[in-house]
Length: 477
Image 1: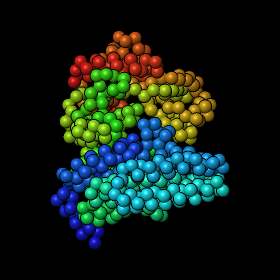
Image 2: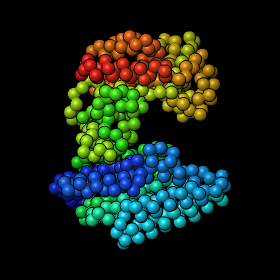
Image 3: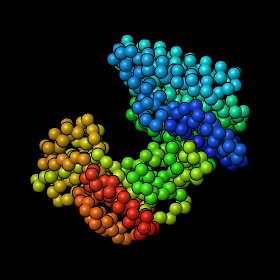
Image 4: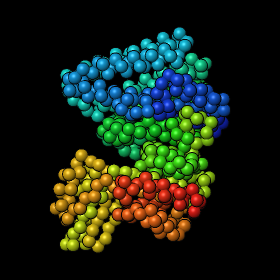
């Protein structure tokens, strides 16, 4: 039966390729934006079937978004503070949104009724939290899923209002039971559940609008996947349905050669590889959730980054098939990091010393960005952490620890760098000519990035100088 099911589904996707469009909170943050998104979906449906995955509604400021306000209401409840003003504000906002963007009386009535039921249940849950005063990962998931249930149900209503077969799909209960932690087997079972749920809807030629929240995950969705879980949900949907393309709709034209707010001449890249995208994400560029990239890469599904507010722009395609042939694709800065130097004449060369150092970082949950070693010294960079003081205190038992705060990692990324000689020397010479001191140097084993550490105050100047040398002047490209 499973084989027949898979063969049937393979035939459907072969006969009619489809796309998944994921919309972030900013893209669906107001009634006007929801209507714009509906127009994008409507136009895309003229060419091929579309599945939409949405985040909770948000403004340009994350702290003002639905998810942040939901978590604030929960925090008030736990501390026995009044959560009702926040809840009422959220309720009124979503009810007004329904009123503004859905004109058909029957559709309007149905969606508003559903939104009101969601808030009634949420109020009951928050009242229970004021009694138990405990916020577990399961409680967190039950709060977080509300945001996506609201946005997805409203967008499905907007599509129906425009004459499309919008179908609200709630993934709140899609996670398989019987797992105490996330694992490959857990995600295999999750994907199987997804396929069973979505394939009938697609066969009926409906337009699914899917919640970005994908169920109560063992350990909590924030802890196990992170705040970018809606990106990951879209990647799972794209992978299990073997779609032609996953589109991530944001408020930027695509992936730039540098931060356009910092570098006026920054250009939108036609394409980058998944490996380059992963490097950019790691070194501070908010491209795409790293779990997302890993899943779609294995499924051989290309990803396109597009701008909701400029839908006719081509965006940037993330694919193994190289289109943009530049040697260096991006120059990025990751600011406000700290260098830790651990020196020990007595122990550095001793067996197991490095392992002891790494165990300390693991114990306090502090992630290392870069690492460099010499005969008597280990240098590491870390982001800010509430437990940094405890970590340093324990490291001092292994050697002399020197701390340098307010530093920045400057990275150049490009898959073709490994085939091009002399880039490191030219990078360091460029920074030296600008009077920028390099405090630490690192190159990834994949040889598709070169990184160095400078003072925070020099970070912007470093990016601008390197962009001018390597990209504006087409020095290597």
